[in-house]
Length: 370
Ligand SMILES: [Zn+2]
Ligand SMILES: [Zn+2]
Image (cartoon, rainbow, N blue to C red; front, side, top):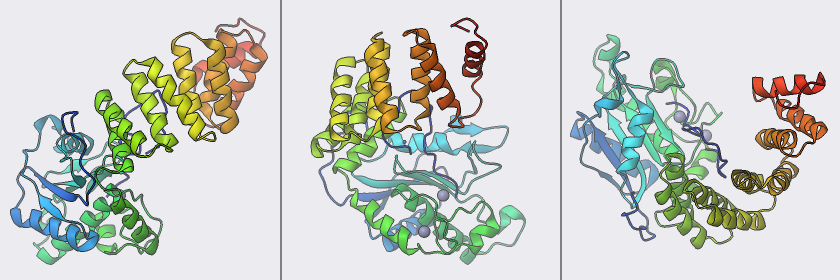
């Protein structure tokens, strides 16, 4: 079990949620949907069937085992003899059925996650609704111990419940008596409870409400495509999300971002302004609007939009950075630039040598451009 990746790829624009179907796949009609299990590589049919039974029993949702796929060699790290879990999640996401409540990959391949040491039992994305479970290390034989089927199944049960919980939107839980706690070792996994705490049970219920065809389901799909740079698919789902829930400022914001990434600044601006009307307290849309104006060289409007972002959220570090650069480079207002550079560094975002050098030059009375 490991942290679900909140953002798996860098992005210059800020989407509304911080947390990851081709266009040909038409919008699934709203229904209860099915949870799917996809074997990856050599997986015993009984193990896949057991996984589905756990999903049905614990989450009260229909479950189907899909046809297996080979483990893609391109995601094998030969030096570690392990598969990159992020890469496998991308593979699973690509072929996710359109009526899926969620999708869990099941493999005997050993997994690693670049953000964690050594290995992971599984990985999941709250946005993609895709998870992955590796059975490689549940067997006593992996660790030089005798085979122990009941123990193997107990481990599989806990990791399946945990990862499916992630795919339904649950983060890790600080309650040590909850299956959503973060366990990184086999000893911790054996000690882990099999059940959800009360709060996480409610979270599961809410996650199950996000059925295929609902506004939030389309929002998540759109967001996941956006994170992968699949802009036409992102626009398709986010447009549906915005139509199904016309008051959702987050969907409108992300739709604006998707249009901008597709190179349509006009539609991007329309949706970002609309998002600001729907959710004036949300700084994302104002910040993104500033980036659109910046891209077309409209510095005054860009300044106004970034200023709106920092007045909605004074701790928005990147908006302070953009304002500092705008005031220094384009608006010839060095005192204001300094205020925003310092506000930016004050948010503790780590080292930024460029901005630090600019501050030194300004304070030293040097050139305006470092
Ligand atoms: Zn986890
Ligand atoms: Zn919990």
